[in-house]
Image (cartoon, rainbow, N blue to C red; front, side, top):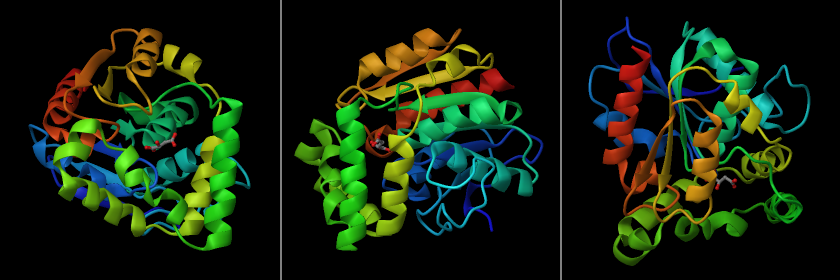
Length: 267
Ligand code: MLT
């Protein structure tokens, strides 16, 4: 069994593809605008992470990381799916939870990551209170059998500008959340709760890198982006205006332009 990998764009088969990893609790659809806006002829692949979209659950994917929810198991599932498609190297971009998975790929499958884009994410582990809250949410969605505990994220994921002026965008994000399975949401919360600090992994990454953050991102703010950029050599830091945590959805143009520059650096 393998992850669902969506081909958002078919490009030059001789080039290095772009692989985009989605945020929690969404799926590959959040990357559609960025994929379209990338300049050049990239192939753009967007997996649904375990338990999201049309992918099998985390528990049903045999991961090298062993049993139980983990970001490592998500990264192994992405690596397996890419290898199965004959993709040996990619420009890997991840937003928030997708960024946690991208950092685990750098650690566990370094040959796969030709270029790295970390968007609205952080390399540090959770403080105790945040970890406990994740475990509480996991138990709640499972026992409720609904997504009520996370539906409110449609307004907290986006920034002040989107909340004030873009009701359609907030509803679109809400629709994506509502489409997810409670079991997948619970599994991912437990996986994120257990993730380690990966700042040292970034320090060891020698390839081209981009760190992007929404100017209105309260969840993983500028300081978290600066921390990651400072850990890497020569990472470009981009602050995306008029956007909260979901830069890829709220203001995809500057993010796509930065990803295009990253691709050019990979060659
Ligand atoms: C996300 O957007 O993926 C989440 O905010 C990640 C998290 O809960 O840490």
